[in-house]
Image (cartoon, rainbow, N blue to C red; front, side):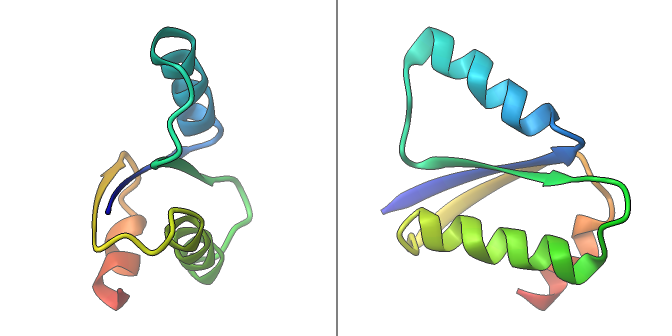
Amino acid sequence: MFGIIVGTHGNFAVELLKACEMIYGKRDYIKAVTLVPGEKPIDIFTKYENAIKELGNPTRFLILKNVLVFNSIFLAI
């Protein structure tokens, strides 16, 4: 199984997925992760863990991101 996670500042990832759904329809293998003010790295890490679980623990996944703070979190995965 394959999954895609889009991670961005604010709600950009959520809105980007909504725009894509308008064109292509809902896809169960794509999840959004957001970084909002006041969150700590552990909060973001937990969001990624939850997104992976919601995707059904895929054997492979692609993470598209625009947030540098995520780099330290990926080192822990």
